[in-house]
Length: 548
Ligand code: VG1
Ligand code: CO
Image (cartoon, rainbow, N blue to C red; front, side):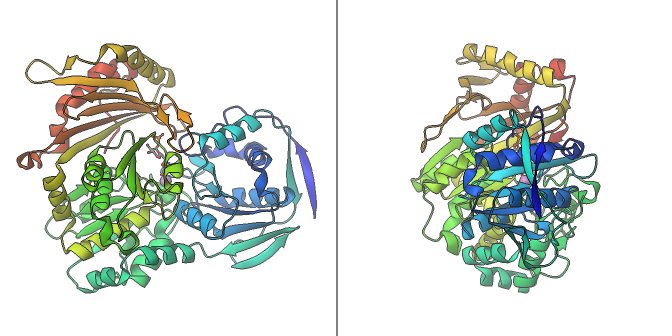
């Protein structure tokens, strides 16, 4: 077997976004496109030569082809060992778990996460560092720089590796180890949560749940853990077979895309608990009967009750949330006397805080919750944490959250997404807000009777407390007296046009006012955001596409 050096020229736009390089499948299918990016990883991440690498993806269309290319390139670039998930499959949190457990020099995760899959949909690739988490900007910038000057890549001339047989084989000098994608992850979960208590909850007969894997990567993980190890009834896991196109749906666990689960948990006969995860298994949605847990609240509830799970019995060292995530967790941190950090959007910003032991739990409003057990957000982990709480407290989801609001107050929260809008219009909208920012503090917005007084307005910048790195222009923040906030930013994960995200939050201490419909409670702030940002006139959209 021989390594070839192939001449190539740079592609524009191989800059990773919020979470890796995401493009249409057709982009990745262009000759040399994937290869250029992968070679840029090998050229800049020099520890991989002679080292080991974890490799796997969420099973979407083009996963298998990409895995074979990357294996042959790893062999030609002197990687000693690649641990690849059976069938080329690894959930994002499982990849993180395996990088850490086997102390590899990093991992390559193939996923466009919650974006649809299939020949005309999205594909993605992301590099994770040896700590197990998404590469920080310093690394992704270096990879991107390299893609702009690249003129050759190395690849072994070899046949495809059998990815469906567990065990070792060789590709030239490279040892390819096909591993069970579920085993190590399931073991880690069993070490963190009270599996006996959860087992008893399922066998009690008075608790029934459904987990919607959305035909994405978590199906096999959820069947193994929930049905086999914890004894949930067969059929608990819905849409459990991973499909290359996720059955044609958006593998995005929210009220819009997981509506079947919402219906199953509705009404007197509804299931007690519903949960879903996304394409690559790092997101979670948690539902009770007729009850939706806002991800921001979920983080706060887990933080307030962490000691009920064996893995967190000694309490938490601190908590972090992304900037647009509601401030519910801040109130818990204050009560616990621990730090709460506010980071830019994207899991990579939690890595240093987790590594330094400054935080135990972290989360994002975008259905992401996680802890220091790995360096990615983790969908099934959050579901198991909730099951552990329900088993320990012997309360329903709604009771747990209502108790939480009584104790800490409620942060009403919603996110409005305007998808696929014109990129120039989106940039123009943000520029317009940037110009407006200095004039806002002190202004009374939202009409004469009542209204909201602006306490601060800025374009969020973050200085990492561990390494001092600075991230600027991370989203427009408008904070009001009393804690209400409007946040606006553009998505960094889309592949078509721009997506505007508008995040709205308002704090309510009075428990008599904790049961209003969310959109109604937030209506005045929603209106302020629309008018201030001139959303309709600039984007042509009167209504958001997705409300969560
Ligand atoms: C979105 C979310 C962000 C999340 C990111 C990756 O990014 O808002 O919180 O970290 O997706 O999640 P953006 O830039 O589109 O707002 V995943 O599950 O797609 O890897
Ligand atoms: Co994801």
